[in-house]
Amino acid sequence: MSDFQNVKACVFDAYGTLFDIHAPTTAIADELGEKAQSLSEMWRAKQLQYTWLRSLMGKYTDFWQITGDGLDYALAAHNIDNPDIRQRLMDLYLTLDAYPDAIATLKLLKEADNATGILSNGSPDMLDAAVQKSGLAPLLDEVLSVQDVGIFKPSSKVYQLAVDRMGVARDEICFVSANAWDVAGAADFGFQVAHLNRFGQPAERLPGTPKAEMKSLSDLPPLLK
Image (cartoon, rainbow, N blue to C red; front, side):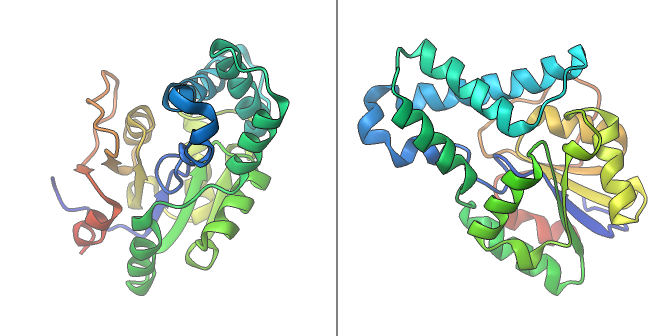
């Protein structure tokens, strides 16, 4: 693990990094029973697959539609035909909980005069709802959505959006993600990248190597000193 040099902005992925993507199924786990965990994992997997496939097909649609499509697939695969459960899961996805280490870490970064932002696949409405509900809004200078470029991560157009909107060079951005494929894409683009390995993922066999691997967001501020 190496220290980061000349960082002027800290940019975070949203889903799985700052916000708990498994919170919706956890909230109604009693109703879902033994299907809760596998449903949540499949929902996330299909959500991501659809972003990559639509990017390759040139068929962009917003992340809210993709989130619903991924959920519909997962529900069908688990033989759950219940419109009420679907609606509640979608509603819960709009107000995801922030991980406990998110607010404390962002406060430390702001106290040290770091610019902060989110760079996410999420649509603007989704991100606004999650940021407001979690209490992160006052701690973020920018909340950036791929909707502005019409393609999903790991397209270089997405990472360039952070450079353009944060007003700093790519190698002056510290980017943090809990998704190993996002880490690879951001590092290959030229960000200084920390992999927040919340889920014990192995390194991806892709171009782009992070400068650091962390178990918690609280590990980040010391790396920037």
